[in-house]
Image (cartoon, rainbow, N blue to C red):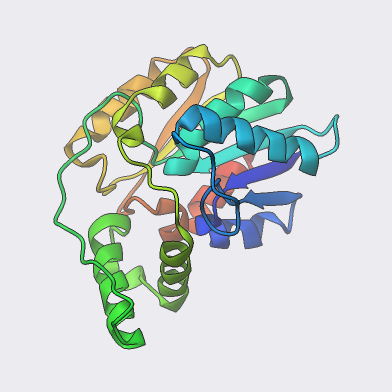
Length: 236
């Protein structure tokens, strides 16, 4: 069974998972090297574009596990609705659009093209510490490189989509197994992490809702071994 990972932020997961199974990483529309999606941008339009890409990438009878981190999980929910008959499991990591509150956080610094490279990396380190990591000591050079690349190549803005409920609606319609994974210190969940657990555990097809101790929003990077172990469970 292949693993479909939405977005480049799963770098550490892709490297390890590819030792055991076929892994396909897809840049979301308007991010990375993907083309810009048509306006107005919505999770539904982007999910349909991702489904079309999967159809062109995998064999027609090839089944897969769909893994979506953050905005990738929101888009993945729409893709899962379209391709449900080929998906063995949908794993959501730290995504919003659940119709639940998003916690407040400190403001992020804005990078500028006028900044020197070391200044830009300081900005990214600050922002990763506020928004993405639970343990700032784990912000390494690879994380800074990925953040730099992703920020430069991100043309699609999520806007109000994460504040909606498109993922919640998709999860309630799906009949395939789903699993939620959140970092204990996820900045977007914050005080409302328990509400996310309750939403998932109320789904009749929820396998589990796992909280990664000490990890932030980017739990898949901070604790890749724990995430990879979950994603490989069905093969063990």
